[in-house]
Amino acid sequence: MCRILRAESKVPIIMLTGRSTDDDKLEGLDLGADDYVTKPFNPRELLARIRAVLRRVTDKEEPGPFEVHFGEIAMDFVRHEVRAHNQIINLTPTEFRLLEAMVKESGRAFSRLELLEQAFGYDYEGLERTIDVHIMNLRKKIEPEPSRPRYIVTVPGLGYRFEGADAA
Image 1: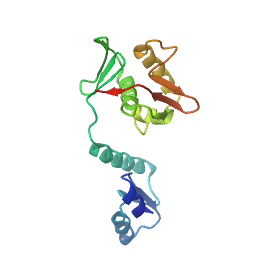
Image 2: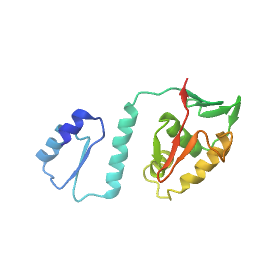
Image 3: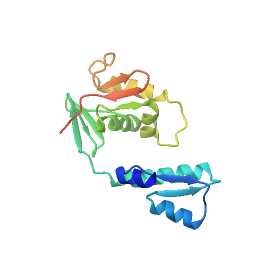
């Protein structure tokens, strides 16, 4: 399974198994696993290994555009700022990370959990509904009519989707 997955995808693979001989570990890594963890394992160590593998994967990604325009709004990823009508919109770091995640994958529906991970990291233990408050605040700052959102659209039963980014 690992060999097939590795041939078709670059998705990170961590083998979690009861097989703990050196030969088993070497075979798992040779088949394409990024890491190999044996039982019994420390859950905190597993989370740290998952974060490490994800860091390596995201570090290899191609850089996207430095600035994106949507409507009258421009988002500059290098300067870490958002402008509307040549005025800087003051976003909190969390709001910026949320908007950045959605803008970079415009049109994709994100669950609240995915947005939590983007904004706070994989080890955040708060409530998923926290995202709703941040989205409400973002809408107040970037939407022409926050009560009728044009950019950050609710996806019923799932979360949110960003509409309308035109890379420039």
